Image: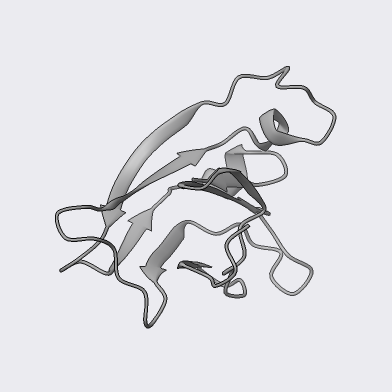
Length: 117
């Protein structure tokens, strides 16, 4: 895993997330986000993604942001039995260091949460 957080994810009504749950390779980060938390039982519908202060991406590059609404595809020991179904949301990078995404009822329709990568 990266030693310094690169991205911050802020699902509406939930705590800030900076540590990826899984890092399949050096340029990919996956964040498993529960649809609800004990302190906020209402599923989130909006997600802010940003580069943490002090982090810059190389010029003419961006980080693509995707959502998968089937976190079971990443369950330990699952062996990839369920195919990840990623949908492109947008990106962040030089000149656009943050973005807000409406993920609709992602928390509602995805049992257990979503995966952002």
